[in-house]
Length: 391
Image (cartoon, rainbow, N blue to C red; front, top):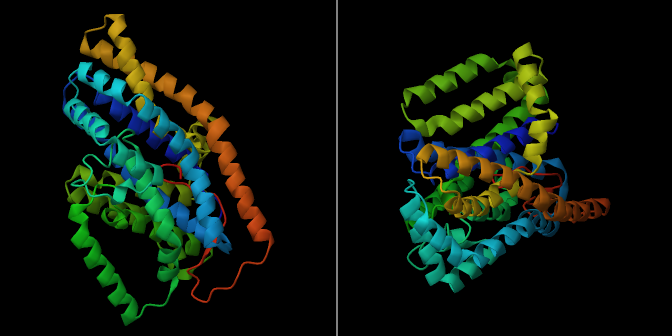
């Protein structure tokens, strides 16, 4: 299946959405949208669905050994993540002071608590974050394990967990259905349900539905594009309308990620199949230079913006701005501009070079025969993935 260029734009828009939500929660403006951070947690939900799609596409493309796959994924996710983690650790004490002096935003108390926990338990938090597996550490053992130092890193841990198991999950999904497979799925589901309440929000067991939606979407699009008669006959707009109606009937804002995902998939397939000018125009907008530029550095933008927000809060103290609306405008302007500049620098000098190096390993591996593994579980496929954290 052809690379879905529209997803690059989607990632950039989602990263901006998260940034705006975090800025909103740091202001003294009060109202439903601000208290809910503009619902930016749902942007991350879409990121996770997108990651399920992208890693499945990666694994489906062509075979390589698990060793090369996971090495390339590590080069993709860790260098820029560790860069921003080190910066966040370095300013941890200052960050606590800034949050304590910040406006009475909806997340102020939570961020003070997280910053305090990070400093009190810093050796454990640092070790867990360096491995990227802090999402597997029970909060009872390490308070605020999800969000210490670099709050956005909870989803980095989630991505890393998915990368580690994705080849085995995809190989399992590709197998014929059997009673043994059903029993295994039930056993894993029961085990995950048992440990889930004891683990943080970034435990992968809490997010398998979202990853599963992404995986299922990939196979739907792949087989429809390949000409599967049944899938090809399904009416896109009618299916979309039914899906949206079911989401609306739920009467819950929590359905927003699924609504957005269904809409994006409708646009992508509609544009590819020439279903009408509206799909072509939306696709062309997504594939245009501005959104592609933004999407290219979405991972850096996602990781960097809280550090820039801290700087904006600190400098705001010297401006004498006290009116909440003016504070919100200042914080949004400084955070947005500063994050775009810092993100571009980290993308150009850290993220892209290490990603290119990892991809070169994949090309080297694909040039030599890959060992045959009967189960298929030790083989994944080369390609460039899109993820919740641009992993």
